[in-house]
Image (cartoon, rainbow, N blue to C red; front, side):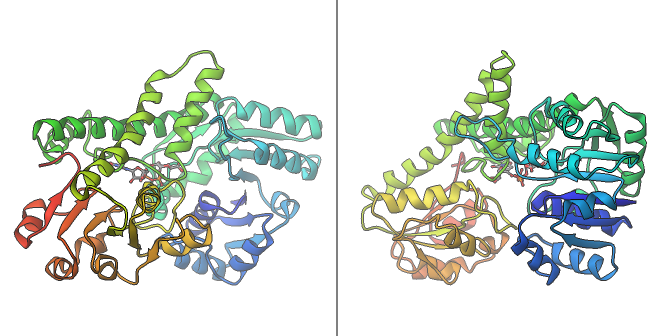
Length: 434
Ligand code: UGA
């Protein structure tokens, strides 16, 4: 099938590459000429395992191309995806400016007699589809189209496998013609397709991300009880998670959730519910617990070091999770900046996150970028692990300890084995475990 994706960010680019990989002919559109030029040169603006090869292979096979022209994209495609950013506004509600602009632009290029399925893949508040539909009709009363909601559930760091083998594909549609085209599009993915109305599909996305955030906050709240009682959160999570009704995924206690989705989507869902007149107090508690994880962690560091000013502290990790270079809303960055703000001399190392942290000027000016995990630990009075990159678990910890001033180790993601760390001689502290 011929499809077009407007917005070549995370979701747009990975979706485009995966649709091409299964044999569709895809044109990715973006109004950022710099990004289009990079993509045309075969350079990928984000780090995502497997994406570069996927893009290069499909460009070479002529199944994937890039343009800055919406007209070009819409003209050649029966299915037109909208995958533009929906950033948060200061009150937590979603800024739909880009969606509205794209809807108008699509209306401007739709030709008479040219049926198109306009699919919203961006994360949007419930009832946005109705507005997109009304906008296209207002600007082009004779246009023939249907609006479909098809939320995306990929995770950064494993976006390609998530997209190629999704647990489910949600298609919110009020038109049989559009639904049939969407089913044909997704046939090669061999995953269950759930067809709903448009509003329900939109709601599924916010409800799913908020539920996962709630699961994380739940286990984090239990981790505080573990700390107060001497129980071990890893054993408790295993014990809870073996119940198939609950499941072990997303029950990892730590510094809390971050990234460009959960914090924004929980806030948005609170705002959406508020606007609909049904306040969602539970989600406010989810946010409160999430913020308190970092506070409790910092308290442990302060309790051990007493005064942070002038203390040399090494930090491992900057990205909001492993296997990505994304540092947006990263708790690790917040941790580093709070330490530096209190006068500590922080040296940080991250396998992929340092470039963007510097490019976006996210770090306190006193923070030193280390060349390796060992370099970050050199002379440190405490070492803090903030992101669970596998590389960190593989370090020579006897060597790390030998190079530190004092062997204090705070594992904010429960990545390391407490018994082994203590045998090596670390004064080891984890989250929610003795
Ligand atoms: C999340 C969802 O998992 C995707 O399904 C969704 O498509 C995406 O948001 C989106 O809306 O675009 P993502 O933000 O890439 O994906 O990353 P996750 O793997 O979900 O992790 C989010 C945060 O939760 C990270 O900071 C991670 O460290 C934290 N987390 C995750 C925990 O603290 N504990 C866990 O057990 C799991």
